[in-house]
Length: 398
Ligand code: FDA
Image 1 (cartoon, rainbow, N blue to C red):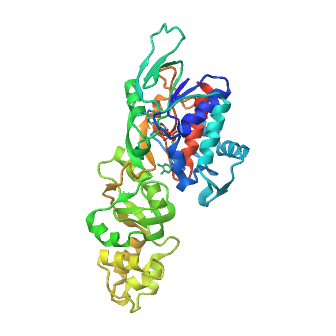
Image 2: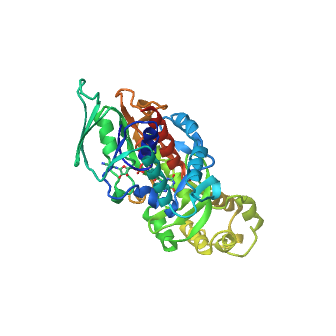
């Protein structure tokens, strides 16, 4: 078996296959192993989530993830982490992080690969990949030419990940190989990514860069109640990264995308609260400062032209303000792109793959695992869990 890409999914697959006696070669062009794992989770790797389920993933083929996720679960990975004596802790929403360092996860995967007798060709540039002739003497089905020589393999696994953070080794090779072998690729897009705003809104908000507030964000999908962060170019923070997946996904079906909606006062009946203060002489912005950061409240009121005292608003106006507070519609101008994205939406169309083995139906012996496929998890350890589960599914079958 030859695996291109020694990241999260590639190493998991290599260890699984190697430990069941398969001869495995891992090929990667990077000079440092698994840089994405090293920088993940702020250096502590949010390696899985206690609440993994298909509802935390986006894909054109939403049921595809069920089989692999149910056969190699978060509990299975937690057991592996514990077996390696790695201390970890749980944060909000079931997210699990290493206490010390993401490097421990890399070391664990490398040790598991060593247990399986996995060989490495790293760094090695992949030059060409081709189908072997039917009568290949060793029964190989694929030939891979690299900067360190030619390799042949009965099974070829593509684990090259997505396009985010190009400076640490992301490349489109996986999509190119899929196309070469006739598989459909759903156009990749940056996801879990900060959103940019148009100049009219940005001119009011950018001076507040660095300020964060708890919101409920949604865009044709689940509601995410987490922090939103104002940046020099627009919005970021966990709630915005989460909702960016859904905002981006609309591009596949709609020319005019629905805006992102933010509830700035989660858990508050905004209309009731404003009407209660309808006769107050205080400025609306000062009232809002009771529940929102003061500088934000003032900028937000100026942005909408709502700069009067409370008692000068008609009730109908207060109702409009309340509905804007609980459903502020923002049309992003775009995203901050792959340089800032955690993951890639889209990828190899899973409708062409087996959900049990990850093998391409039309190309026996060719497999795709991890982020290169059209499976994108929510923020919170889900993308690594997909790398582990799809890697194991393939490693057990190929
Ligand atoms: P991964 O990117 O891990 O590995 C791909 C490998 O292929 C790399 O080693 C690369 O060098 C190699 N490769 C690429 N092109 C090649 C070529 N042409 N030739 C040879 N080799 C090639 N997820 C999560 O669940 N919890 C978290 O805490 C985080 N945090 C996080 C932070 C940041 C900053 C980013 C960018 C991403 C995350 N993620 C995350 C997402 C997570 O890192 C990602 O989903 C997984 O690493 C995907 O695993 P893969 O093995 O598919 O790709």
